[in-house]
Image (cartoon, rainbow, N blue to C red; front, side, top):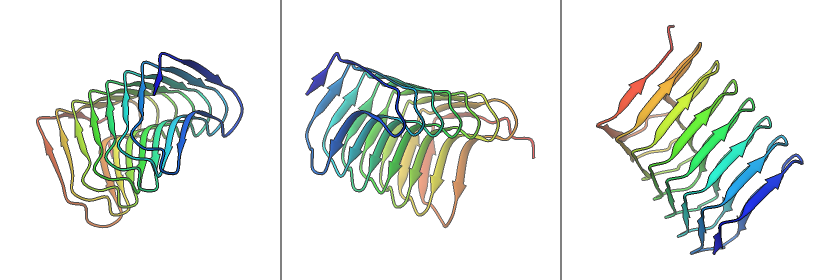
Length: 193
């Protein structure tokens, strides 16, 4: 359990909190994490499941920064009421890679760098439930939600997504056929192509 910590990193490829290889059933709550180096990770779960990440405040400012990153079968985690801000280019609010059956709810994500992603589901990240998340992007070529590489059977409800500036996409699907459900959501896209 990690509660009420303040963590700051400034080097490239640095981690605020890193749960590695079967670091399961943890609680990470009310932490304040700031990363400023390139490829900085606020919270990274690698093959770690059944944890709760809630009420964390995460700020990344380096290029390619990740607010919360779940990878390699980090399944059945709960991410709720986190506030994530990314300002570097190619920043990711929440990134799921090959991770399934997670619940993401009531998170607030703001990206202001170019090529920013609010929430990205990648490489067979299946059967995740996303509800009542608020995402705002404000730079060029940015995405509220991005589904990529056979991420199927995900459900979205109560989403409030707004993209500003050129080539902003509220909901973007790429590469193969994706089965998903979206209900009771507000999608406001700035794309004018």
